[in-house]
Length: 377
Image (tube, rainbow, N blue to C red; front, side):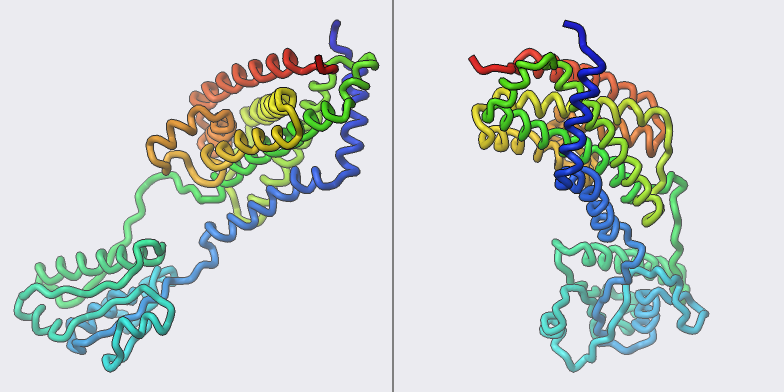
């Protein structure tokens, strides 16, 4: 039997009205991804994050230690205490020498500190090695910042001593490479998140419940075919995906200044993504014996894709074995393709991603139609 456009659109109209009346689906499809953009954008944008507070105890008090403190505080030589930059990553807080430094850090709920030992100036003047003590917590991101600053300052300090220069200066060099922000990668990732979760969870739930409640059996008495019913759901979630894409891109650009290229290459991913995951959700719900088992299987499939496909963090930063796992997940090719066309304008790899998605989507759709039955045997 040929697919009827009229019957497909009629089923689409009925399903969309029910979806909109429910409101919960609209919230998770359109509003929840924007909440995630606001949340992760605020955490990782770094726009309003201040310098890390670092406690410093100078047990020496001589001129060499004073120059070192000035350098650690981001002060350029000869500028009378003027900070080198308003974006200097650390802020020093002086700790009196009468205080036990370790206890002082504990009392102030901090793990970041620097101690300049007594005799620092005399050791430097005599050319004897002398060590700073840097306190930190390996699990803390601020400790990594502090250790990086201290390492850079001490390297420059040593270089100045070799040259016989009494004053210390630091140069900041920016590499000539494209400048990307976390939000630039977050927007395509969350578009992929929306492409996955909305149709996947909905179709797993609908197909299993319709089967349990014999609604499919009732639908079998109508002229509507299985393919038409499935196509109407694909069309609806393509529309939801496009609306979600517009809202998320608008929020990312307006609030965090995301850099996004709007090109025709985005369109195939917005079409194939829902096509693939509606089919997969239908397949999972169809082969499951109950709504409860369908939900479990759906979660087992969805959650690894959600976190291992580059939704929130780049796959390139993961361990090698997890990168291998990511490359077998369908969502990876949606997000990777969106990154290639929205951020890098790199269409060669995007065509490869697109080709993989076409194959996977066709296979899922064919299996869903083949195994989907109006009536149980």
